[in-house]
Image 1 (cartoon, rainbow, N blue to C red):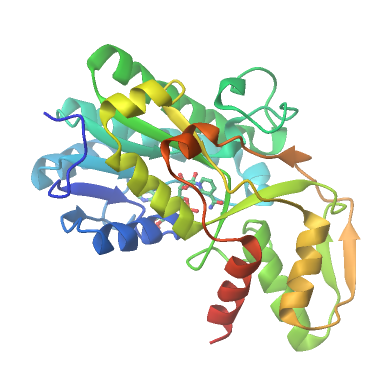
Image 2: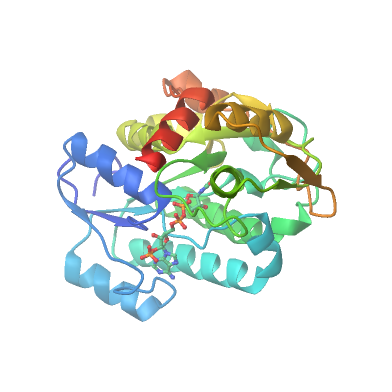
Length: 316
Ligand SMILES: NC(=O)c1ccc[n+]([C@@H]2O[C@H](COP(=O)([O-])OP(=O)(O)OC[C@H]3O[C@@H](n4cnc5c(N)ncnc54)[C@H](OP(=O)(O)O)[C@@H]3O)[C@@H](O)[C@H]2O)c1
């Protein structure tokens, strides 16, 4: 069994309806990967190991992409830790372990920059994982992701697989969760601005606006997934750190500047209030993506252009 991905591979893309999965699906299709298998959560709950095993046997899968996960904003993560730990561990472990049992050597796992410590040296290198305590608001999600990266790495070391992990920064794009209370920063802000513009109400921003964040357009991430599939196993193992790469845009912005940018893009004079009783989360979270950049992948979509196109598409 080859350790390199092939265009003719029968690839199980989990989470294909989600923000990231739907962008990966489009990019792979456009680039000649015509053998992609999908299953919604309703058809196949990935927390169920027996069902996952049956699905793999029935579909004769060659390679797996794990873009399925329980994903949400800071509030949802903080309020529903049991689900974030249980669902994400079960989904990842069932898929990684079942892939191995079925002699599948090629797999992509998507983690997150949330895996890194709360007070991490910046920009964050892959090496900084587990060097101090996690951010408490999303530690459940982070622990599930860290366990899955480790599982991939141990399989690569001990069983000669090519399970490739990517740790993306904050992603934004079209198929996101635009709920103002449970979504991520950008989609929830967009919904708040949209609602406030239509009924002339105040926009409340959680936290004091000081934290800085790095944002990456979902199509850039999908390109990074394709890029990682197309490097050889040897390149992957010799350039990744313990089987994972950071994936960031290198563009950092404070929440306050992001709010100002959105205000301009909505072309409206908003009344804005910062609610400091809501958690800020980690103060700074910028990835060092040099390892993947040096191999040849770089983010192409600037934040201003990505946001402006997104708002225009949502308005049409
Ligand atoms: N969004 C971000 O800012 C961000 C940042 C860094 C990393 N990531 C990573 O990227 C990956 C995808 O995130 P996303 O933002 O695309 O999330 P998303 O939009 O919420 O999509 C997640 C997908 O997972 C599927 N899913 C959830 N639970 C499932 C289950 N028990 N069984 C089967 N399918 C299940 C859902 O399927 P249905 O639609 O069928 O319910 C959904 O399509 C995750 O691993 C996440 O950690 C995301």
